[in-house]
Image 1 (cartoon, each protein chain N blue to C red):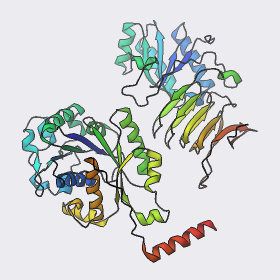
Image 2: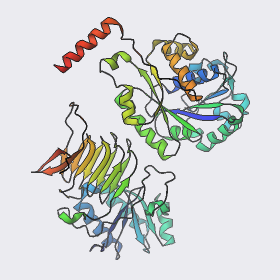
Image 3: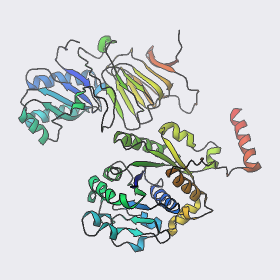
Image 4: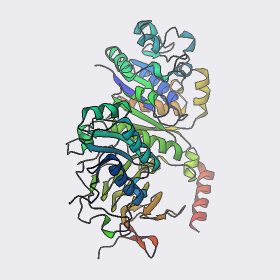
Length: 251
Length: 269
């Protein structure tokens, strides 16, 4: 994957998104970040983010600017990680995570210890080269995805720039936001958003598709209320400007 | 054999954590086990009331942790069962008075003396919950067959799993068989369908629990109480005995069956 023009690289981790900022002056880097936030607000809304700043020397005002910028887009800044010791110190003073632990760096590890949402294997994934929200190539079909081999329970969240596969159930109150497709090998009853960066060709499929709310790109649908249907594998996709669910048939 | 430390928690309040802790504690003691019930709901002390031991409190868990007394002095021996002890919560302090490490230390002191240490957790998922779960070897989640309680229980199961305290086991409390049969209440299978954890007990709604709780005389002591029987069965399952789950059919008889048939036909039509 080649780096995008603005030099920004977004990865998924268990703790949230890891965003590597491009080189250059801080306000330029933040400007590029803002462009990303504005381009795909749906993907970032409600996310937790750590900024990887490399060897930059940052002062408190720089970090506050970043935090305010992210907060303005409803994104929580949880950490700033860099090589410079003084920068780490300032980040720690602001209550930010300055030393991202190995598991936050999304390195493959055999088994998570204590984390809100253990996922295996952790995804060393990048979404470089994602341009605007309307580019159909916003998410590369061949890009590896994230696999969560467990049931997502109420309050748990998965967010990844690529596709997400859950082997297990997605319970009411759980949320999945993916840049690409969402596949649930189990019962889907939580809230899901596929193609959150604007890809209308994304699909959501589940062995039992009964989500609280289902979004694909900018479209929103709810499961029909009150009707108890037989559970059968279904695929939801956008057709003629509407989200439709179709039964899964092998052709 | 050192004690098994079991934390009873729920997420949602009012589902019967304290009642469960008291009754399972009593039922285990009835089986001859040495049991310590600890109230970790600091500031909202009530396990002592349910056990009817309120008037015997001299020291509480915070006194032990802050060194004002020895553990032995704070443990209250039950008035009915010689193997049952209570470690009461402090009523004057709040959750910040006890840290997870304090409780771990305390449980380590209790372990050699008992077969079971039952910890009554605070509701919620904040400090009180985290502290109560810290020393746990096992966790029991109490829920009611209603959507909001199950949703909260699901959140708690997720946190327990993440903290690697699991696998948590489930008690479905206050089940109303009549409502379930009419299709107006979640059935145990509906609850398990969402939570997907092992079931360790189903306790029916039973007025005798309310009465016995108010009197400080846990229902598990009453031979005839249906809920008491369920709590005794839970205790037996905790000791490893294979006890089949009860099926509650208080809507039986000709009338109940007729009305169910009529309803079913009505729905099919």
